[in-house]
Amino acid sequence: MKLVPLGDRVVIKQLVAEETTKSGIVLPGQNKEKPQQAEVVAVGPGGVVDGKEVEMQVKAGDKVIYSKYSGTEVEIDDEQFIIVKQSDILAVIE
Image (cartoon, rainbow, N blue to C red; front, side, top):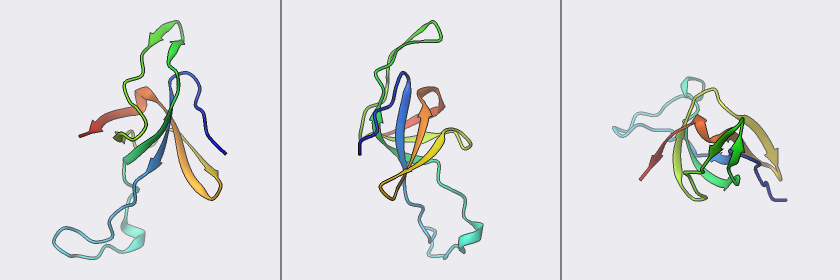
């Protein structure tokens, strides 16, 4: 199955959080927050959204940082994805 986002929507897949810090300290599971970094899987066509022309600024394969409580989580073929609006993406990691 393939997800095809509509309008200014972007499908992202959350990157796996590291379980140890750079100094080697192991983080217990309950104290970890979800990372806000993800990889773009699919991008909508953009177009006119709410009366405004929207040009898509991200592309599939980009690594991005997104708003903490944004998007809709979906599970397809035992994989977790998040569908967000492009405006919920804060930055592209280069």
